[in-house]
Image (cartoon, rainbow, N blue to C red; front, side, top):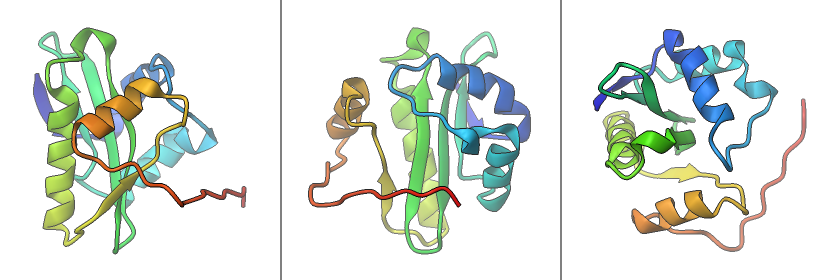
Length: 138
């Protein structure tokens, strides 16, 4: 596997990966324009991995608001799971957040995404109780 920061040219391959990842929630915010804006606001934080054949095998969208980091769309292709790619991308994103002075990171997992919940709890992340998420379109 080869790891690097995500760039605009990764969008199409990333979109295909996300569309084919069970438990991934996508919305209009995941448009090319939305993702490129996110990458521009958070340069160098989002990560990808490429398989030996050069295809995009994984993504981590990562950003911060100046206080807390956030991760979105952590995905690894089925063919590359179990090889440490997810852990490595997350580690790189967390390191970049620390370099930016961010000491805590949050992420959201869709409640029925058992594979995602298992990954995060198995890598030392704490599932929080007592927080209710509210959303509204602007």
